[in-house]
Image 1 (cartoon, rainbow, N blue to C red):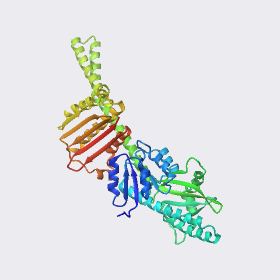
Image 2: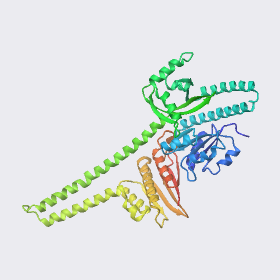
Image 3: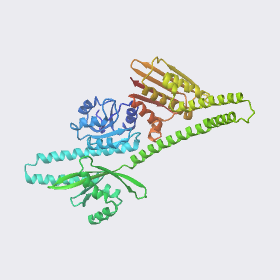
Image 4: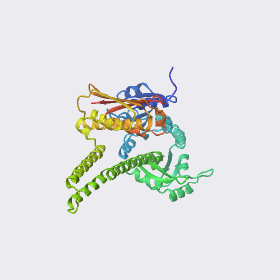
Length: 481
């Protein structure tokens, strides 16, 4: 029996993301998932897809390139891009060249994405209805009287679409005067109207508090490179709110107007700020740690060495100079060893000289001294991997071990690193307390997992994590060489 649910297509080369997405939204929609864009055309031919969601970074082609390619044949389908990186150039290309409805940063939130998909389905239905009406109008344009009546009917329906949109919309005439707004726009600018809207009062209010809404649409509409501008306003609570405006010229009855759509991008900006703050905090912590190591470890050794040299240089001292020299050499050896340890934390020399297996094993031997965890490391690697791959895998395995040590209360960690044909497979598991993966992602706490996944994807690999409370954690990584 055919489903009466609206159909959405989600494309992502990460199977974990696909499975989580389908589990989240299968209750509300008929969800079709694909691991690449290769089979997308066949799906679109055989299904009435209303919304396409595509990951931006995929091996065969980017999400934006894929959407550009299908836009000609499927212009009505609403397109959404997921991305792990915040780039203004990519965002502008997505909206200007690929007609993207939304540009969403990972890790995404379930409720936010659910709301966006609902808006996208409404957009599809309204756009589809509008296109159908325009087609009817063209077909019945033979009789002038009949065509005029259809035009009136179409205008009424346009106002319904305009008024019911979740996005804030308004129209300016050539004199930069607001002539039409929807309720969402009035809510955004915190304008309280009486029973009937007085446009004289409204225009005065906007010119006084938000002059950018009057001046910017004309400038954007005349700019061939971009029609988007973002700015900051104050909300009713006094908190800053970040707004994005998209403006284009429209023609009606041989006159020119400026149609502008405003979207609230505060959540995206706050998330970007959170990422930057996290990076800065991490850098500061690293710098502080190395400063402490230099001050507390290397500093006293160098001070002692200086004192030995001063004793040797002072002819009045009666202490045995050979004994002083012996102590100085011992102190210098400790200083060299301390310097190597600090340098090894910055760039592990064992990884550079001997490869990932020896580097991981060396790290395990180092942390065994302060940990009660039983480690098992096995590998069939007989040759070195590419430098960038070894570094990424080394950092990933170390981050997994540190997470297990800090958070899981694990007693055993098993690591397998094997090469099979042209693939390198890493299996990592611990018997710790585990966690709810879906809950972590939904609450935005999975930043560490997101960083690992992004790191693996950057070298063309796949990352799969399985964990449940009280059942430990299993991680599988596959790198195609």
